[in-house]
Length: 85
Image (cartoon, rainbow, N blue to C red; front, top):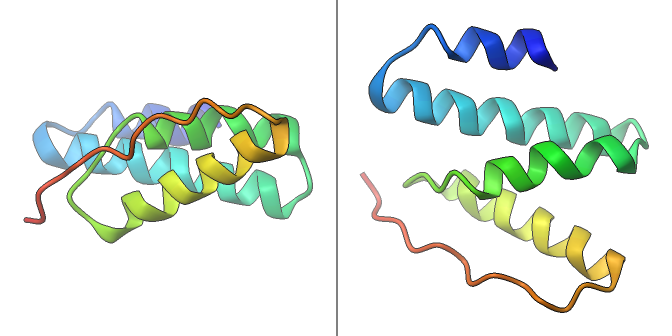
């Protein structure tokens, strides 16, 4: 996980933010498909914390919401409002 995220540090501006979002989201989805729920949470919640103006943010938010419901945590943050570019 560290290598993928470290690669995003070399970028700047919007490319860096979007790449960090994508790295977290896809790492979390990969861990989920691999069946490792413990490792799924951190990157999914990290992606959700980085709203981007793209429909993939909805995917991150939905997946994070699903994880919260599975944990029985009823305190869901409001979905961030982002402007489409």
